Length: 226
Image 1 (cartoon, one colour):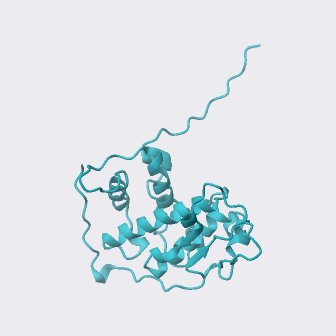
Image 2 (cartoon, helix red, strand yellow; image 1 turned 60 degrees about the vertical axis):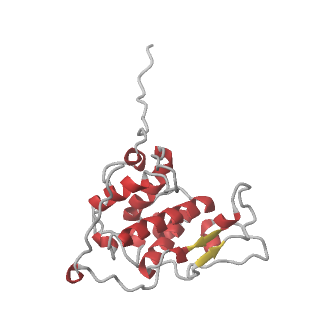
Image 3 (tube, one colour; image 1 turned 45 degrees about the vertical axis):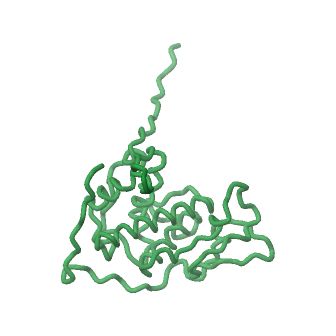
C-alpha cells in the first residue's frame, strides 16, 4: 500500500478568506418541480434552502430506491460555503434545463435521477471531508497533487478490522472522480466557493480514464465497397 501523503496546512497569512455565504441563483426553488419529480399530493415539497431535501413523498420512486436515498442530507458537510456548493451542484445535475444551467458551456445536459443525486452528494461530502483533513479551507487552494493523493486513497476499500484493504474496480471509482472533476464545470453557478479559474482535476482526461477503466472507443466509419 502506498504511503499516505500528508500536506502541511497553508500558513494563515497565505490562506484566502473563504467567501461569505451569499444568496444563490436557486434561492426559493422547489427541488422536485425543477427536477421534474412527481410528488404525492400530501408530500412535503423541499425547497433549495432546506438543509435536508426530503424526497420520501416521490410518487414514482424507483422500486430499488432505498428509504435513506430519499433524503439528501447536506448537513454531512460542515462548512456552510461548501454546503452551498453541494446544493447548487446537485440541483444543477437534477435540473440541467434550468435557464442558468442550460447556458453554462460545460454543464452536463443529462438529467440525473434522485438515486444518482444521493450518490453524488455522498461522494462530494467525502471529498470535502478529505480536503478538511489536509488543512484545505477553500476550494481555490486545491492543486492537482491533492487530487492525486485523494485518488490513491479513493481506490482502496474502506478499512475493516482484521482485513487488508483491497483495490476497488475502476467502475466503483468513476463516480468519485466524476464528482471531483465536475465541480470545475459548474463554477459559474457557485456562490459559496470554487476551484481557481482554469483548474480542472486531471485536465484532458475523462473520469473513466482517471479511474483506470478503458476509455470509450469511437468506431470509425469506412466506406462500403461497391
